[in-house]
Image (cartoon, rainbow, N blue to C red; front, side, top):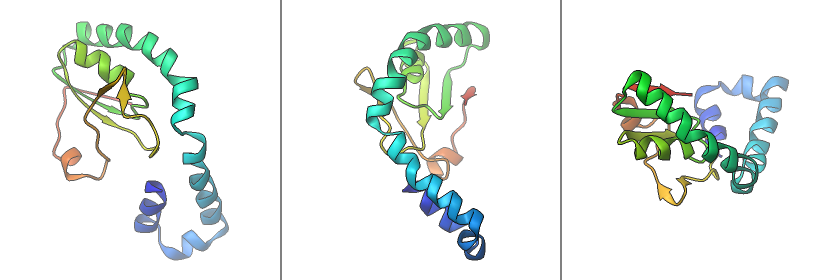
Length: 127
């Protein structure tokens, strides 16, 4: 739903009504249906939870970030690992039904267009 609203805001009406615009609308409409909580729970969380501590530790040892923004954070497993290493975190995720918790610990989240995100600085931004 959020992407459809963004498309209406950014893409001119004649383009939205074109064949390409209708195709994009079809893809967007189906996006949240595919990338729902069940998808993240079944297909993403296990692998993400396993890899996240190693990734976060490697990044922290190499770059020593104090704050991390993860664009496309999915379930937030990587953010939870950074938080365990005392980093401040912010997660950005598009699917409206994506989990906003990792291991039961909620993390701050925002949209790319929010004022909170535009003013936010970080030592590391992941995507």
